[in-house]
Amino acid sequence: MTDHWQYLIVLGLCLAITAPLELFGPGVYRQPRRVLRAVLSVAAVFLVWDAIAIAAGVWTYNSAYISGLHIPFGIPIEEVLFFVVIPLCGLLTYNAVTAILARSKRR
Image (cartoon, rainbow, N blue to C red; front, side):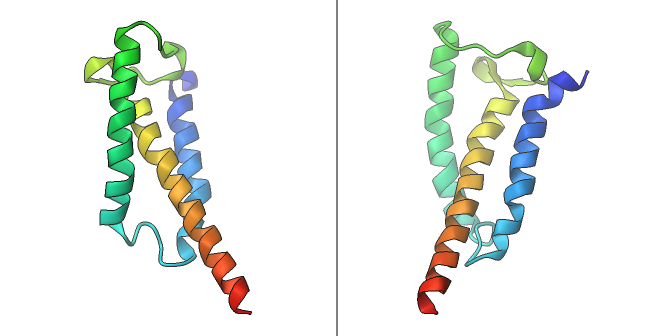
């Protein structure tokens, strides 16, 4: 039963682990327009790529590990969230490292 939630659980854990990084620097969540522009433009490209790969039979998802919810073109909701969550975690990490390095240079 919990197998169907594994992908979503991993994405949730990624967000939970990187959430404290918001406390460093100017913050990612405090700049929603920049985040949306950065994440959604790239996510759109990869979602089209996924749709093409799924239609061509090149790419599939193991139904044992996804919820079964899909958007059009057979893309699982987990995959959509992947293209939002992982770049967001990357932005949080980059923002925190940049802020920490800038502080260490001022000392």
